[in-house]
Amino acid sequence: MFPQAMHDKPQPMNIRPFEPRDTERVIALWVDCGLTRPWNDPLLDIRRKCAVQDDLFLVSESAGVLNGSVMGGYEGHRGWVNYLAVAPSCRRTGLGRRLMEDVESRLLSLGCPKINLQVRHGNDEVIRFYQSIGFSDDHCISLGKRLIPDE
Image (cartoon, rainbow, N blue to C red):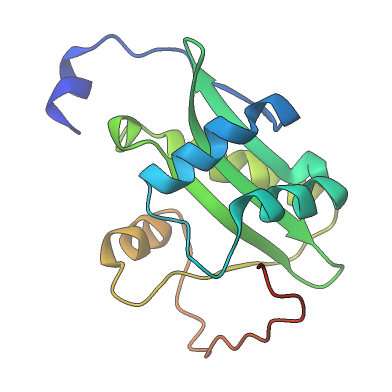
């Protein structure tokens, strides 16, 4: 646990579906967490998600501060998780686990049998987190093809 987290009284976390008013705060969170990339426009990613299964786009807040997000999706064969973000000040508090449990529960209620996600090479801390909540390496190579460039 971070030193300040050990001494501070835990604040209640509210996990809820994303709302358009969250857009700027979510993008700021993603930037703070190092999730944005030059080839992905985060505003377009949010707009696209809001058009498809928007109930699987979740955020968390505590005392009015947005401190977490996760996007889930399900296409009938596999579920996917993207943009799991926890504010640096809230890491190691269980928030990431709670966000994942919530999105997993929603995917399971849709009949989703398995969840896939991607972690960038070298992000060992995040890999250890996912392993601690039951994920394992599928020994697959992730390939991608951009159909619509974010310009």
